[in-house]
Amino acid sequence: MDRQLLTIEENKSVTHDTWYMKLSGDCSAISAPGQFINIRLDGFFLRRPISIYDHGDSWVSILYKVLGKGTAAMSKMRPKETLDVLLPLGNGFDVSLCTGRTLLAAGGIGMPPMYGIAKELCARGITPQLALGFNTEADILPLQPFEDLGIHPVIATADGSCGIKGFVTDAMDTLDYDYVCTCGPEPMLKAVYEKMPAGQLSFEERMGCGFGACMGCSCKTKYETKRICTDGPVLMKEEVIW
Image (cartoon, rainbow, N blue to C red; front, side, top):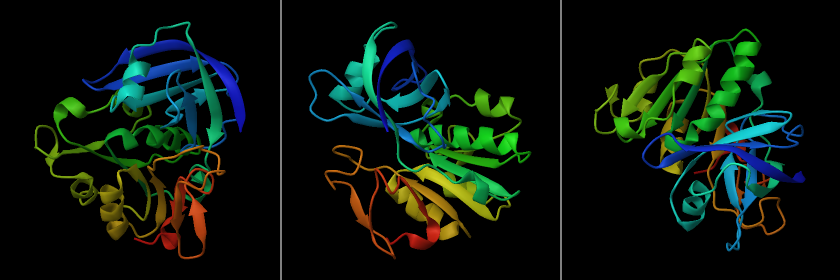
């Protein structure tokens, strides 16, 4: 884990409530899709943990949803401003465990880590399947980066305004897979868990410190108590307890 002062290169709206931010600086320590960064914001006590969308040695990008005062403040920031960032945090997905019939499944803002997995799998000669769930067509996050990799997402919307009417699990029913990597809100993860034969789940959790000191994000697994911020956010299917 490094503490870095990163400079905002871009900060733009991509849907009515979701923003894309690109930060420049030393990001060479990032090692796995599914890791996250923890951002300090002036005037707010707790840092904001946000999944990594894409990265290089000298930059990192995120997609974040404006849900409260902290993320609202982030959306008003401009290029050349700096942010105090802890990175990388968490264990990320182990892409080496994925098979040739891997499915990536995500709901809403759980989509960003799927892009990192998709890039790594494609670099290994594997084109994964992708199922995404959103509330409405207006909530759909940018899909072109996946299309550029040759991945054609199957979309489900709760109101039926785009793709399959239903949830990401309904999109999963149209695909043939034997391994799943997934990220999203807990009710979605539980539903995906019931359908996945094997795989990895990335949990969204409120965090205090983000690096394991406060124990605020602890959860029980089949083997031991784990902290989502350090032992997760990615857990194997076989260790999850609902």
